[in-house]
Image (tube, rainbow, N blue to C red; front, side, top):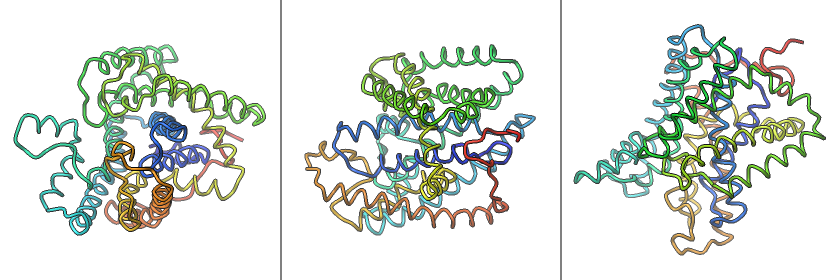
Length: 399
């Protein structure tokens, strides 16, 4: 999620965007709401669009090494290995917790761990062809299932760097040609192929978002947006939000990101791409406004810098709080109480909201502890606080 930053500096405004996104995703996962109500539709439309935004920002802020080998070396050491280690640690701790409080056996922990890494897209097919007790997984899996995004990001990074080197220095025409090729691959893959694990069915779309991020950086888009007065930027952003929400109502695409067949075929692909492109200027304007308020800016900036750890931790932490609060069974497979004929009461909404807030707050000390363990395990030096002066300043801008 853009953990690698341009010229070893971070752009606070982009951290605000990512921070808002990870908090919104936590709300999506944890807080109960009425199915298909206006709040639910707004959360879903923005939450799923943020997946594309994260890839776009990853392409924008990613460093450009001189060679592909160095690109892979850095990402394996700085991204893949720490993520795998954290996931194994969370599976171990979560497994112990589920054995104590959710009547899990050791075989249940092993089963959910395998489903977490293999994904139900594979395990359900194994179950259909054998007597193995596979399937969608249980409580432990559902509270660690956001890891699917991490694996999708790993696969995208694997293909992104050769493609980036292929068009580097060749101008906008080469970039457009690559986008057309990716789109030409994506449409038949999405329409005709069976769902693949970790979002591989829509991998070309994620690559397109990363390449869009690269081009936005080349075009100094952030500088152009910064020069736009808020008195003009805010009405434009409101129009973008309205257009984005209208597209979602017309052709909501949750299924797109979890690799299920869409209802409208190729139209799903174009709608998702258009939604992400439309919403980015609105989110950037929102981030500029947040930057004018000290404490909200500090909060979003912290969460924006730690999106990966918060993504992996928040649901498992919320499970503990939901158990403590009682009369509340999220996070898990029951996304909407209406589906189980359970009335959605104010008590449930309040308790799920409190669970979400406590989970996000608990992520802070847990992340600090993890960073200390990570430095020991991978011999990493503490990160120095380096940011571009001025919120939202584009990379490499000279004064």
